[in-house]
Image 1 (cartoon, rainbow, N blue to C red):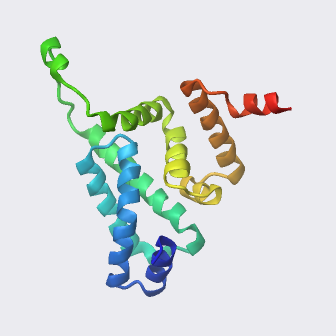
Image 2 (image 1 turned 60 degrees about the vertical axis):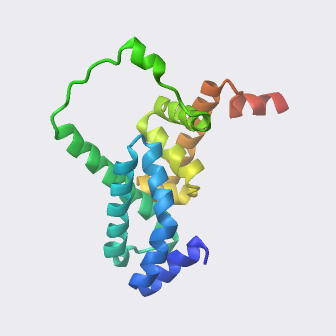
Length: 185
């Protein structure tokens, strides 16, 4: 079954079997969302499970099933914000700087390099821009689903994505959308 079919089947039946299939399908997407926001693997997995438990418990509250992904990622975003608030209340631990000798012995696996570059680009964006970029271009949410997830008007979502794309293009040294359009005319 495709992911959309799994969503519709779960929302129609709300059985444990349907939820297990949905859990397997959504787990990877939610985990990736949290990882791209800079959380550790363990934290991403914990938050993913928390979100999916909320989906199971609160599925009856979803009014428009067409906006399931918007609702899902709004729930994920709220879970992450709650996590950050809890973390900011914890005592900060002081760390020691890594010595030059130890720092030189560290290396990065070659296959991890593109992911690290993506993470650097995402970290350079404002948190609101990062949410938009991850949800739109990594998770593939539509503009309408983004509007639901972020509780923003559709026009605002489109404008912010346009600006985030321009900012990313500048960081990558590529011509922005506006510059490319003006050269064509």
